[in-house]
Structures are given as C-alpha cells and as structure tokens.
Image (spheres, one colour):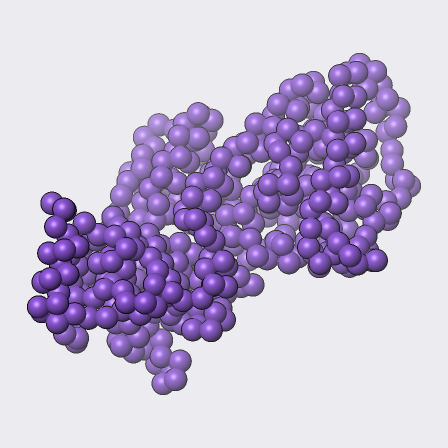
Amino acid sequence: MKPHEMTGIKDLDCIMRDNDWVLYRDGKPLLTPAGNEVAHTEGRILKHILIKLTITGSIGIEVLNSYVVFAYQKDHLENGSDPLLENLDAVIDQDILIKLKTGTYKQEGLQNVDGALEYLEKNSILLNLIYTGVSEIGTRINNFLFSGDTGNNPDASSIKLITDFIRQNYTMMTNEQKSAVSILSLYHNGGILLPLMFVRGYIASSEYANVLMALHLKYMQKKRHSTARIIGAGYHGYDDVFHLESPQEGFLRIHEESLRVKEYLSFFYEINDRGKGMLELIREGEENKVEFKTSLRWDVYQNKKNPAIEHASLKSVAAFLNSDGGDLLIGVEDDGNIAGIEIDRFANDDKFLLHFWNLIKASIGQEVTPYISTFLEKFDGKTVCRVSCKPAPFPVFLHHKGFNEDFYIRTGPGSTSLEIREALNYISERFKNDH
C-alpha cells in the first residue's frame, strides 16, 4: 500500500528521537507520498499534524490539511524542486485575477453560461458572495501589488512587472509559506495571486473563500486550465467547486481549508520570527545577540573541512547560552551576504542538522538541547540555518575535541573565553538565583 493511500489513524504516535521527532504508524515512521519520513526537529509541529490527522480520520492527500502542506514541502521544496516556481510563467498565464488586472482576459472560450445562470437562479445566496468578493478584491490587489516599487511606475499593470513582483515575493518566502501557496493554488485552482495574498496576510480567510467562489462561478469553462495540471505532481485540485455542493457548503469548505493552512503556518511564525525574521537580522548586522558564520565546517580559503571552523560556531552557541541568549546564523558572511550552508557540502539539510546536533551533544552536552532550536530558511536557493539560543539556567563549558575546555560569554559582537577566576566570579553572579 502506498503511503498516500493509507487510511485510518490507529496506532499513530509522535516519537522523540535523538535529534528530531517523527510520526510513527504500525511501528514504522509515517511516510509522505514520495517516501520521506514525517519528521521535524520541533515536536509541536508533528503533534499538531497528528491531531489534525486524528480529526480528519485518514492519512492521505485527499483532504487539505497540515499533513498535505508538510508533505509537499518534504517531497519537493526540501529536495531541491519547486514546481510552482519552475512553472511560474505558465501559472501566471492561467491566473484569472492577473488577467483581469492587466486587461488580458479574453472571453472567448467562456462556456456554459446558461449553466451558470441556472445555478445562480437556484442559489441566489451566491450573489452575495460574488458581489462581496469581486468588489473588494480590486482594492486588496492594488494594496498588495503596489506596496513596493511598482507603486509609482506607469507600467504598474504590465504583466512583466506583476510577474517580477510575484516572483520576488514568492522567492523570499520560507519553505513553509511556499508550500502553503503551492497547495492552496493546487487544491483550489485559484491561480497564484490569491493564495500569495492570503499567505502574506493581505486578505482574510473569508475574503479568500469569497473571491475563490466568485472566480469559480463567473469564469467557469468546460475545459478550464487548472494549476493542478501544471504543478500537480500527484496532488489533487478542485475543478468548478460550486458544482460539488451548495454555495454555503462550498464556501465553508474552502474557508475551513484555508484556516487549516493559516493555523499550520502560525507555528512557524513563532518559530522563525522570534521577534525578528532572518532577513531583518541579516540587514541589521552582527551585534551582542546576533552572529554570522559563513559555514559550519568548511574552510572556504583552504577548501576543506576544518575543525577550527566548527569550533568557532560552538563558541558562539556556548557564549549565547552563558549570556542572555542570541541567534547564530550559519550560511551568512560577515558583511551580510548569504552564502548558504550548501558550502558545507552535506548530502542534504537533514545531514547538516544531524552533524550540528551531534557536535552540540559531544562538545557542550545533551543537557543544553532544550535551550537550543534550529531553523532552516531558503533565500534564492541558498539555505541559512538559524540557531536560536535561550539563556541556560546553568554554566555551560565547551569541550570540543582537539581544543582546550573553556567558558565563553558574549562581549559585544563576539565571544570571549574567561580565565578561571573570571569565570568563577561570572558564574557566581550570573547563576546565583538558579538551582
């Protein structure tokens, strides 16, 4: 039985491993449709997915839920593939909202008008949805598209400018956000602009559902091009959703599914932002609670692995733990240029994280792991690892193999080792109220 054909939630459990959490079913890790483990370094994420699968009552990609968004990210974005970005021009070409905005929508091919009129006659309540959605969306599109450099451009409605704007916004998203946009586009067949605006917070769930219902009715065609046919990769899109149920049921389903996606993303807003996003930290530069490292282990000058490079990152982590906490960004050069952890030449992101956590446990200790979190984010194909450290409630010593055992604290934008007397004085003051 294929992973995406499994149904039932019996024996589904969330298990903690050495470096991550994984969902288990029947004594084996639960797999995505492409055969990747449903695993993550944050247990809360997997527990949330487990709850949603339990409520749904099935394990698969037939129902849009957190598992589907997670699986799409695992199967595509984390494996170097982004079907939506790779086919962006084709997706934009089929986006009705963009066509309306640029004046390129042509009514030839619009079919089944009698069917639409008959449906409206039987379901007059849908007129409220269409009127509310279409009348408001124009303002929201302008607020979104013209919020940046496009605002004062005389060609602001050109397809090229809008395409470039959408591409820029999409590529700067986290993998979780990209997966959400792709899945919404796939499952609801609403193009890319509407899901992008929803994920970015420019429209609410009710507005998203309103406009989507209006689009599916007003522009229905017998052979309407579907985003699912362009980037589907086995996932399911809805065609003419209003044919499947009453307007109220259709609206409620779309609304509920969009809320599920937004709820799933809320976990990552807390994880990734931590008050400031990665880009904001990079722009502001290094300081007492932020440090950049180009790589974790690779010496770019000698073009080989170098334990001293590892030691430099471990010093920063130990110093953050002994001080007021902070963020280490691996894959960022001193001047803020994003180099990406790909420099370290690991087979994949999971191997990178595994190596990092093994270093932490071997050089600092297993007991510090609750005070350290790691998050990966891609920027134009380059991955940055954010190591967020909380202040430890006990003294932390660094005993990296091949180096002296030292006690580090933060002093300005760097990490400093203290002599024995200094360390004792610091420890007695810093940890005097900790038990």
